[in-house]
Amino acid sequence: MAAALRKSGAELLDLTESNPTRAGLDYPVDAILGAFRNPRMLEYHPTPAGSPEAREAVSRYYAERACRVAPEQVLLTASTSESYAFLFKVLASPGDEILVPRPSYPLFDFLARLESVRISYYPLAYHGGWWLDFDMLRDAITPRTRAILLVNPNNPTGSFIKRSELESLVSVAAERGIPLIGDEVFSDFAFDPDPARASSLADVREAPAFCLSGLSKVSALPQMKLGWIVVAGPPPFQRAAIERLELVADTYLSVSTPVHLALPGLLAAGEVMRPRILARIRANLAWLRSQVGMECPCQVLPVEGGWYAILRLPRTRGEEEWALELLELDSVLVQPGYFYDFDSEAFLVLSLLTPPDIFRRGVERILAHVAAG
Image 1 (tube, rainbow, N blue to C red):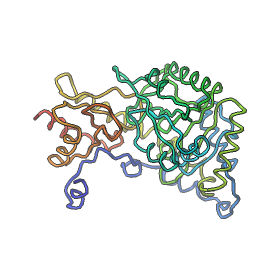
Image 2 (cartoon, rainbow, N blue to C red):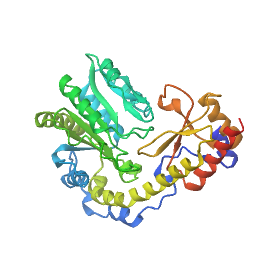
Image 3 (cartoon, rainbow, N blue to C red):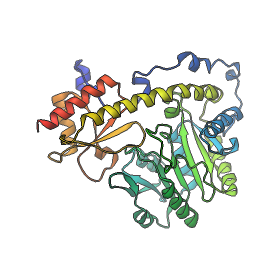
Image 4 (tube, rainbow, N blue to C red):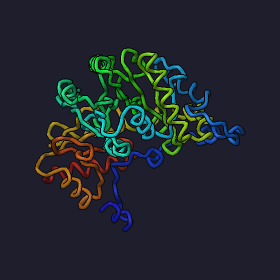
């Protein structure tokens, strides 16, 4: 239906846009292009884990966030998705299981299937905020569980892991010998400071752990195709894991020389882009909250960070019916909550990265549609 609207030339208010290069953001073009003016890009010297300069740049990125990451702990990949593929290869055999949160991003099941690995779920419980249900997480662990994945902040709930929750997770991981995988691609996009929040697994030393991030969100440059894995945990685990990951990386050699060498400059461009994105998503979220008052039948769920907001609608219709009605009658495109494995209805997921004019007009149409019954 959305494709037909676009083809007809009719206006479509797309509240799902999460591609920063299509969100009307102002990029530091000269700085980004300047990062590629390096004659060494014409030479090829295979470096499976990444060039020393690139790994040092990632190390500095974490140091600026008060995390201790040595360059030797860093391994570059072509994307966070490739990071998952590498980790699943190293950690699991066919038929083994990876524990992932629900609700969360729907990509994990596809990535796991490509590696012949199964996904099992542990729930995030909602009680005025999102929390780990540790009893159900422990019950979900089986003899074939090979990793516990957490998305911090979660996509799309925008909830961060709290320090107390991370302590419990580290205890479980250390006791069972099950590595933690922290997807931290949105960790730079917190709306407000919170001392109770755990922003990274990079400093974990008591249990095996990995941190994932990359240029797609850190610098709003998904087209540059560069991510990384930080290997944390006890030093013996770090050494063994890096050795195995380097073997996989050496087999593929997927990260290109130009983006290796441009990484310091691209991370510097991220220092410019992140405040601009934060200004956009904070303004859209504040405006959304201002429109959904006490008399409104909708509710904006609490969100701590990330690029999304969750709008709860009356359960007079299912999510898909709401989404299709909004598209057909109001030309507003949204994502229903079941895309992210919400276990109840009715939720709509809205991208806060949407240009403000489109976001406001789209939300106004949603609220008017709901008010009309």
